[in-house]
Image 1 (tube, rainbow, N blue to C red):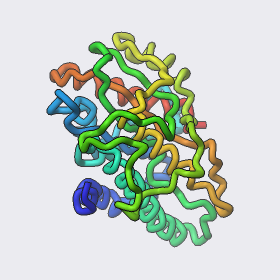
Image 2 (cartoon, rainbow, N blue to C red):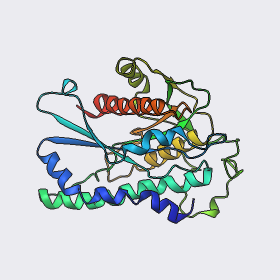
Image 3 (tube, rainbow, N blue to C red):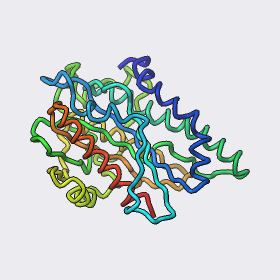
Image 4 (cartoon, rainbow, N blue to C red):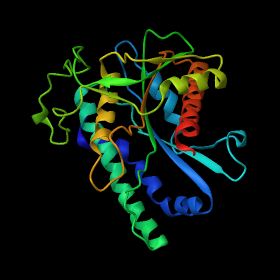
Length: 287
């Protein structure tokens, strides 16, 4: 993906920046806002339309409020969705270039927000706030039947031997072709999400009883697992001496969805995704 294409996908991100002051005021007034970033893939083999992007594309900039039954009376919690505006090309090179740009946009915006909060509070903030509290990548799995979904636990750095849309392999790409790739040579061979996937699956069984949702440890060693590792790896690298962030804090998930693009199936997949996000926020973020 060319640089201007990546920028186009991030353009909508700037719309939320102007609302930082409003969101900060809401937080000070007792409202907690969690932000979730979503990505989906583009055409894949025989699928000219990828269900993973169809599920997320109408969620951008939407907010939902957690049910009062899930919270104390004094709490008001909302979740805001942000969607990478274009379906991602099924390409190792595209993924390697895109993920750092997503996180770079996040950090730059967070710096602006930190300056705003400091000006309002009159004190220095030691830990830079993160714009996105949770990142979820979606991809289709041909093996999944309708109403079946897999939440992946982990991703590997190596072993990508299936050719992508460009005919290239994950372990055979010349990193010199791009200067915005991250160096994975010293990164762990395997990274796991910090989200308790088994717990989330149990919650979803009661929230979406018609769905067959499972916890998985095999994301397929293709672009789905590749983007998952890229995102986990970037989060892993954010640890530094000036932050309380720990390397095991990796709030990233990958959701495999069935390939059907029928309207009712897309709507059902969107319901599964939203309930997944609500389950993560309730079980991992709200104290």
